[in-house]
Amino acid sequence: MTTDTPPTAPEPTAETDEFWAAANQGRLLLKRCLGTGKMFHPPRTYSPFTGRSETEWSEASGVGKLYSFSVTNRRGTPHCIAYVGLAEGPIILSALVDCDFDTIKIGQNVRVVYVPSATGQLVPMFKPDTSDSTGPT
Image 1 (cartoon, rainbow, N blue to C red):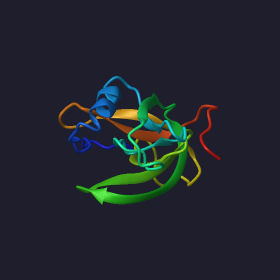
Image 2: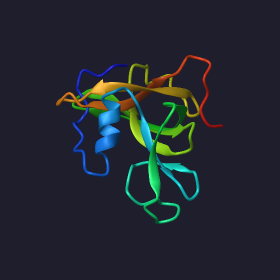
Image 3: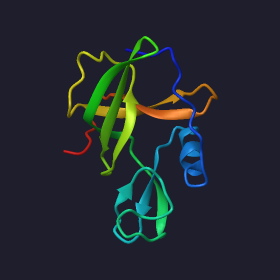
Image 4: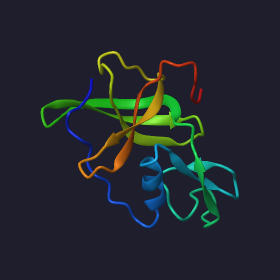
């Protein structure tokens, strides 16, 4: 199912400006902790693993698996919020688009797509991935 209602426009901050700029270029960025090598989301200055500010931006593949989801009505239109386990490790909160919500399943492969918000800012969302790529197991 597709939605005719654009997603809510994000309010970028100093910690998320680069994330949103990359989204406008069709790239999904995550922060990586330099102490552990682990990637994390949402982006922030300090690593959730070490508490230190030694982090860097790293481009994610944009593929993963559906970890959890809930279908609700948003302004009278079905809307699916979802947690997606990215291939790189982090589980992120997003939404599913361009699919039949009655057929989605936990563990299903998904791929990032970029949906324009009311302001034109592109927002990363996900749709079922029918290619051969796989996310985390």
